[in-house]
Length: 474
Image 1 (cartoon, rainbow, N blue to C red):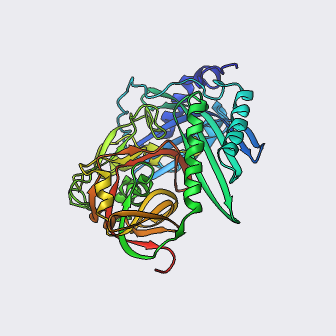
Image 2 (image 1 turned 90 degrees about the vertical axis):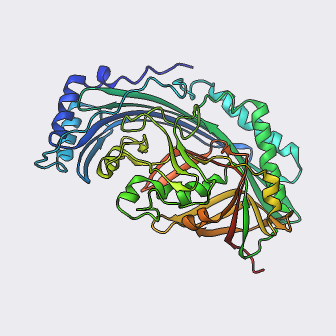
Image 3 (image 1 turned 30 degrees about the horizontal axis):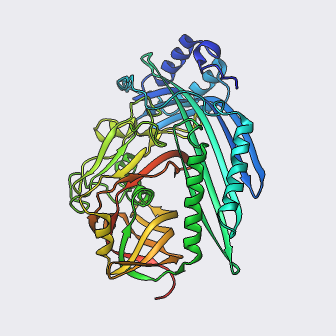
């Protein structure tokens, strides 16, 4: 399959010298700003019940021009990369600067680090091979168990190429592949239907995802979860101890705590964690990081969308709040350094502080000992959707796989369990941290202010005392 030529906008679309001149005009008297240029291609194939339901391919390109003055940012974007479009954008961006008087902040330090390949994952595998793989997944899943009545599988791949031009003349580039395979099964027995899902991916080629050994294991995992749920009993309700499994349950950490540690919420004092720097906000033994530097991971970025190299940033250390995630604007206004967390969905969006891969480090407890500590509660190992209020940290999460635990013994699976609480209190109620930290398989997407970006999560097995569990009446 033919590879597309690399994205070189200053050679093929717009004169680089003129673009720099217009950027400097836009940020004259401003505190910061940049010209963000992007080309993106994305392909999605969805197979549902024996046939291709969706086969889409999208290609887009454009630029975003930003001028920052104090707390205000002027932002203009266009899908047309040309001198005329850029001139129009300058007029809009200048509205935020006015008479200005600021001095543009120093540029980010450069990096030669490479965290992932710049090969195009879409063209790396022929289209017929992708379709055949989805057909094989459907057929295989149905042979695994006669109770399988519906199979859905989605294979997606994209390549985002960005060029970030700074007013002092430096240009930063990054080429970001992203792939994912998701499988969902529905099983039926005696008129009852339940589902199970599995997925994975990262900043990788498609080869590993479509390897039969890989997707067959994913099918078996989705089937296992579906069959567990087929036997599930109504969840109990009340305040009880909760053991959380390793890996993907870190999504609760991401939502209930991670968003509250983003710089903009804390600068505006709208976070439950605002003003608590240096204070003990979690149980001792709890250390939380946001790390965009892990090779090939879904949430990793060589540089953020302002050109700052991504970092391995400690947020909570042994229970003490030691850092927030920062983009350039909020870092400057708070008198700290950027942390490489300025992210945006596309050229049509301004950057803001966002998570990358957020996880809790391992402790020293054995997972089996943690579960054995639960006298009357649940063991939750899979999560679906959740909602969080950043201002108070209150969250509600639904469990996709959970079990009743009594006197340290894991009992029947339960259905319909939700976990209810707030991040600040939950951090203080962590009673044990396992030695089995794991990252999620590469399926996370994070939404904030209408923008979506890929992220990673992770944690070891945890014991949290006294969470509210919503379910059927006890």
